[in-house]
Image (cartoon, rainbow, N blue to C red):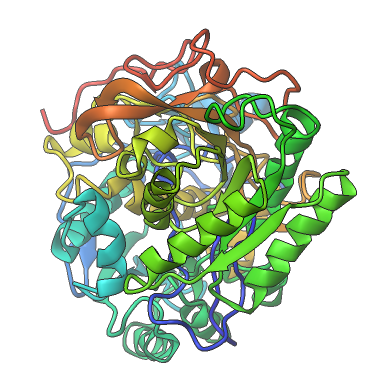
Length: 594
């Protein structure tokens, strides 16, 4: 199986011999997904994975590691109050069954709200504390006492990843990221129901570059043979060989591959899971926006030379794999079907040694074709060169961000030519940001541990994988298997729809033409660049220039995109919520760290 990745209008899915720098756009950047976004229900009450036992006192939850140790935590008291209950059992299910008052939910549960007592608006429902026989070894990597989980980090100092992170001075080390993951595991063990098991956490550093499919496959084999884990969190950023090898060995993994075509996941069901939307899903959302708000209307957001002209669209995409051109052609075909053929399509390769020369050619072709609106499906660094070159050629088009991974991040956008980027807007699956000290993964981590996360720049990217994993562990119940993990995830109705978080769902919820969804984010929001706004970026660095989110960051599923253009309209636009959006305020609880 050849590696592949990426997302956006011209994103990739397979791979011919990877170019030196690979498909950087495949790096998952769901930084706005907080660690409490998953409000799992566990599916039907009569699920075959349920276990009925007498309810007595449940053990506390602490963690131990193999290569690294999850330190002891002072878990809130939990326990049952007698009678028989069927696990898993949420608080709302217990109320419906009339047994909620018979269960001692413990201090970790706010019974007034029926949710876990943590300062997170997206905190999940409480699950009944477990006691009894959990079935012991239900799968490889699962015993009566432990679940072995491997946390993968890429090779320290990988020049491919450094090319991206250096652009925004993100400098978290692997050691800091490992330590942050240990803290997250402690958090989940303390507040989520583990059915008598604790996490045996193994930290593993990759042996090859992010695009090295041979090293990735060897790493997956080594993990399988040395640790026999139930699950792996994370994987090489630019190859699917790691996920393919794990799936062949029947090991579940979350966030272990860049985005792949739907068939990749179906063929490896139930082992491979993602969080970012797929390339096709993003295309669907982008095309709907273009049809409803852009096509057939004059260019109104570019420089003076294009103002008032009938829009002529051009596509610039990263050529990183065999399917890059296929996806780009699919996008072009869809545009033509809507009556607006693309005036120009230009591919580029992500090679730092030649990107400046490529930028000159890309911009020259767009300008010569009379393109008023450049649609970007790129890596996050190349627009720096494209925008500088456009200014050098005195060409000021509209710049449309087509759900392009990391280009929709303020930290990167500040590195682009601001004379150009003041004309930028688009569609993103990220959510309008909040104050990290008040909401989200950074805030909850600090509340739980009493200290900021060691990986303070990248916790937003680290946190989503364990969020999904632990939510489903407690939703599955004692009978933990990969198949039951899938069944619980497919039965889950989806996360709470909100402004400050993306909406995620799995399985067939009717959004994507009957194709089972293994990748998560389903909705998007509309944004534009304000070069004058000031505030913190995603890694809390103060500066000038911020994305503004239309209508307060309102989010749209397929078919819901509005028709009225509110771009560059400050009325109702929000760059950052310094206090949470109305109705999404987190509750307040004393910190366990004092």
